[in-house]
Image (tube, rainbow over the protein chains, first blue to last red):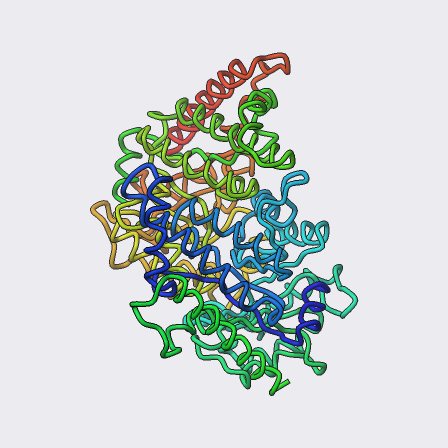
Length: 315
Length: 315
């Protein structure tokens, strides 16, 4: 986790921008502007929409990345939005990761993978690549704990080999996360506390120079009290904190997820940053694609600075 | 689940072949045979290995699919093996699914996705496609329950819209699955039993003409007793049973996961089928790529028939 912590220190900003494009978050004229270019590359009329969205997502992402590079230490592209478009979307996912890395950003691949040992070893190659080839260009992945230790160990090994990290789901930000995670166990713990203890153990052999291991935890901004308790329970575990902004979490809510030195966590906002242009009051349908992208970038940059300053104010 | 059940009835075979290729499972001469073809399409020397494996996986998969079509009702490609190769591997994943469907097979995409509601909705588009375009060509996905109901509902909705299915992890086949799934809850249930009850509920509105809902459950062949108990606990839930063969599960172990009519479950074998050529005693390094593929197909076909007959014998 050392590289992420150093990037946070450099920018003095413990926040990460979620690159989760959807049809609604990319201005319509940007998507439309690729109609001709895409038509030449697809095999059938039906593929047009997905292909056009894929190219538009890449252009949109590059605009956001250019606007926030230097302000934030990291980006977190959510692969679901890209997989929704099929393999063409997955191509754009990898291109986005590569571009973000070229701009000096730490790339946290939000993929929430998880499987039995032999399969987890295949997923973990997202971190190590194939021979000298690194097709994904990422620095960390998110992982699901439901399968237990043998589904996690291959990721820890790969992260160690490649100087990368993973973040395991502990207490997710969504409303129904409590259905499983908050259940009371017979031994008095809750399920997510049991998972938290496992996560702290999974990282134990990989603690870096700042006291945090390569095995982070996902702890939702929407669970302020539990996050504070988890901070004490997991002293060597760095937190990825989603749920800030659009999902309702505030800077005050996440304060307790940081350690006494103001380190130990990075807070994600996706829609609040990449969709900021929609709340700018400056968008109109008559804008050109370039004008719309310029507004996207300016709005994202302003929202990123706001978020940074809000976090700094409570730390 | 009706389409899957009908395909099982037609073949009189409740088994599914896992298409999980790895370097070790594809004969070396098959991989080598694509060296020249691939060299022309890659941008750098480093990409060669991944690109060559991707093409070889596709040829390998087609051989397996041709060999087992008509004997089994379904295939289950595990996406991890393809993602390990980067976007080129993901292309081959989609091509494999499309080819299997063209050969009349039900395609169960083993992707184990799971995320918060808005993100799950994006993943669920793997079932519904983009407009008229269906880039993944699949009939079902596997899903992880750790996020709770709002991470599942979008998949149920998409499955209903597209006449497809999902299978939620309940009791996985791997050794350390017990760390979380077998924990005792304060109310006397175990975690996996609580998940089982949720799964039965998630499917309640989608029960088809054979009494099973669109929301299946993943129950490992390695947990014979629990599988038997789950069969009673989840009367409307169809089971996907991995862990047969290479992982240790036998036909006798899975008997209790079927209902009184011999329906209600489909058993997966991956390495036992696609790697059967390695145990045939007929392979030699001096074989041509075509000869090796022929052996792969013959061995897979024989192993598939063996598995079918073993299952029939206990049902």
